[in-house]
Image (cartoon, rainbow, N blue to C red; front, side, top):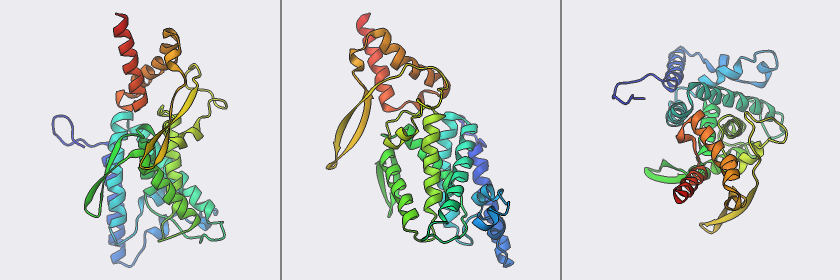
Length: 297
């Protein structure tokens, strides 16, 4: 959150983190008086269906108290994911991802309380919104590495691997509830982030789950683009395989078609969202076009 000159810059991410910490401080003060703010702001099925729909927003600002680890981890995740999304796509997309991702997570949580093995308990925390940001980032940059500290050791994993892991853990939590964690809220946030990156931020379908949000046959595109075919290939990785997607026989297309089908949409994406929004495949397409132009000259 520092500008290029080194001075501190108050961003939307900063204000969101400040709001989470501020509410937690209020929770601590009320805790000292044996009061629980979560009772008023948490999202529960009974209150929700009695008209208290505003809890879909307020539950995202309260956390477990007095243990600070819940709010701390959410603030750290919000900082790293929020700064990247805000710098590349602006505060509007950051706020949409955070609040709508958290809201969808809350709705999914309420819905899953009707499952026979789920208790109708409340949910609190900003995890749904933070995971929506992470889901969007990983969908936009599936092959970039992310660094985590695990048992005091740094671990580097591709963003797509992290996203698969989190999706699996969230789905596991829906089927087998554990540790007071709302797997449904996490799952809702992740799925919203994937879908939002695909539909609103121009992410490709390099991450397999993103293909679920490929609705071109149903919904109109923001701009008309020629359709493009895809073929599959597999890349072995640690004894397994990852399905990649690449333009089908793009190298055989005429130069004019290649530019209109492949290069022009990428240039539009750069103009709208910046060069940092490009995936590895899109960067390779631009490099191929540059090399072709160099040979022609």
